[in-house]
Length: 113
Length: 264
Figure 1 (cartoon, each protein chain N blue to C red):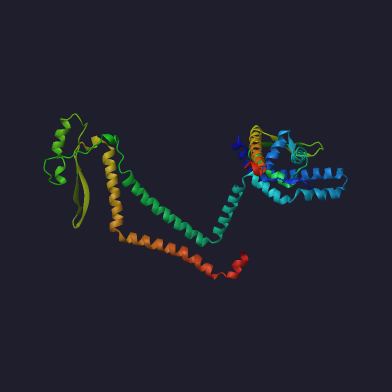
Figure 2: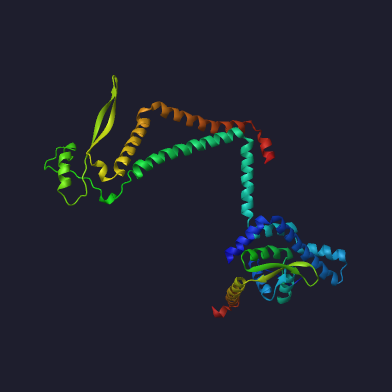
């Protein structure tokens, strides 16, 4: 578990939207998908996923529906809605801008000032 | 879209509460079971896998509570339980509740009565048809002989009425004091002398005039003359306020501070 970064609360929503954008998933599937696409570099407390999922459903960004998982368990699947897709695009843009700004600030050398 | 999702979440939270609770339980349990399956596949014994899956998940009850909050409708539920608590508390101390209701009723009643008078007399005194076309005329005799002298005499008004092309009709009125009574019971009465075509100008005029006059005398009747009514109301309000302040204070004094602290 070493080498994993704790994620900030707001970033979990963004990661969930991204994971769901790759296809409908149940809660545990979203967790695995985030682990997979972040190459295991992020530490997510598993239970914290669910309040975030309920929040995104309330905001109309995810649509829940009950189905059967591949191991034959009844599971609640989450699917990205069209406003969820829009939000994902916007937040990705904002995130990239933030990261670029902070990276360039942190990368500043004394002679550049 | 967002509003619809919010309302759907709120409605399902309120209407299908037990169903939502069941589904949330099932969802979290399925997550832990899935996790346990994966851990078992990696070589752990089943019991150990389940234990580890539960630990990794974290505090279930805490997350369930957070889920309920995120679902929305929590404020409505807590509002409802607040209302129930308030009603229970009121039912427990009947005397205080009755006093509070009485105080409110008297306050609201007095306010409503005074406002309806102010509203009728000061804010909307008359309801005339074609109010813009209604004017009051004074006679200018060149010299100021006082207020009464500028009234137009009825005969002059009739003359004006037939020989002008400006006004549709002209009417006159004159406020007068009359003495009304029989034998020794004589009372001063405020009256109004009008010309015969007074009612032609506008039927609303005399009606509203009469009503507002009647109401004026009603108010002034209470305020200026009937001291007993005024004193009675003051005393009643004073008693109610005294009771509302004194009774709870006396009850509070009887409580032992130690018991109150432990109760909290």
